[in-house]
Image 1 (cartoon, rainbow, N blue to C red):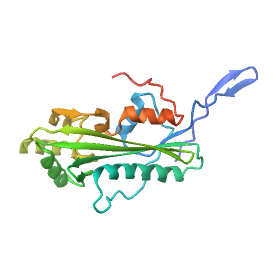
Image 2 (cartoon, one colour):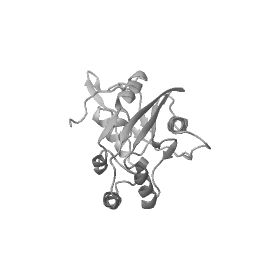
Image 3 (cartoon, rainbow, N blue to C red):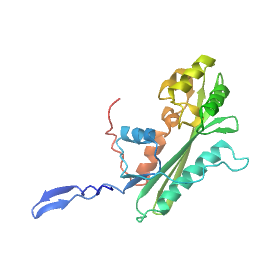
Length: 221
């Protein structure tokens, strides 16, 4: 059963309740990622709707990580925006990839692939790249943010324990820096929230530029 939409906020005026005008356009998040929802909430941004984009995420032949991440973000935002009845809605989409050299490490399909990813990342630096796209009224704003991450050398026991935790599931590169995986990372150079999945500085700027309010009234850490 689908829940009825919440009634619009109202204020009491001389002639009875009056609808309070919205402070900005509706915001639709084109992602099912709970991490992105949590990051947005930390700066006081709560999407009006969450509509994950259904697109083919297969890399093109010889496609490199940086253009791949931005292409997917743009395609996700466009797919969701094209399905909405109101062009004034703002659609935010993002895609985060882990890159070992020119190799794109997406979300591992199983524990065996996660093991290969972690073994590849062990003791070396890699890049985390997030493409961000925002669409409203037929216009598009984009950003691409890159962070350098260094992994310590992982033992077989550490990799096996991490795989048993299940934290690798659904995570680009097979790890989560905001969780147990933080114990594998002695250093990063760049945006931490980018590694989690959404570079907040750049996203806040995009939202405000498109007329979506950012209140900064999130839950204190």
